[in-house]
Length: 498
Image (cartoon, rainbow, N blue to C red):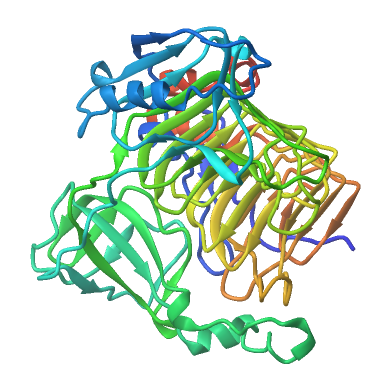
């Protein structure tokens, strides 16, 4: 099958190096992904001042030793309720050696970095028990306003990528306010997608989609307003249509999530007993209820689920230069999601996996934008891409992996259905790509190389890379300038920016 595109190119570069955006036949444009990552993109990860230094206290072979309590005490002593600048961030340095964790390390307050000295610092998830070794989660996204807090979107259609939304708020919404852009659904939308027939085959064990479970809230900041409209800082990641349920703008109180925390420069290794053992470390780092934080230069060995899992209440996270290696588990569903991205406005870049299943993956109803950039997967057991239930607007930018799919998974699982919408595959290299077109949305495959293409999605420049090399970095350069690119790109990325 040789899919074709019947519209103008969605992104081109003019003679001055500026990005020119085309539109689909439905009037939709490419989303700006440059807001993804720490502090909203284009900001270098801070190098926190070391306030506490810990030394290893046992020999590597001492399996009964436990460093949990003393490392946890150090974390708790430095945690802050609020961070106002990078100067408030403090690091705990784990000097080279082995540290055994019989339990779990919890980072629940702001401004703490757990730092090793590279691969010579080894954090061991010791003993038995399926668990996340490091949990980074504290606070809450912030409650909504109960009075004068919810306003109906007046537009018949707010297309993908649009930042201007008409809403009659009588001056209640101000510049700088946090809002949820809520996208509703109805039975008409479910039927349009064909997700009302998943139960037709009782042997499949799938469930039909229900409108009330597919309401999505996109976190945004208001950057302009008048009495009948607002402008948000990042466009909508999925078209909002009145005939499919419409939407609302919901005012949100100040963010109370922990922030400005990091895990960096170490190896994290799980004990295990046998090649299919599952009673051991599951996630090396788990992030939820957290913003503006990071994991960098961490290699995770033998964990059954992931190196880093970014959960749905996380926002503006950067994960970079990390590896998921030698996983230990059965090879079946619910395992080996090497870099699992379920938050909003997150960046995972320059990561590597081997022997995973779904290596660079979105879970259910992930609300974009999100970005995977310059990542590699080898010796896989499944595919990369959105996994299930209408995740929207993730950019897979220069991903090298065996199989990359954006498709209708039908009755898989308990009714995965349309796994993703408005996904962008940009200059990726794979053996096989499936890019399918969901009703009332899009999926884009641009500049990708593969031995086999399939699907009826939006395809451009099959088998030949396009300019710019990286859409994320090009959008970041256009929005914030070259210094912003230098803050997040390594030398190789910067050299091949064009």
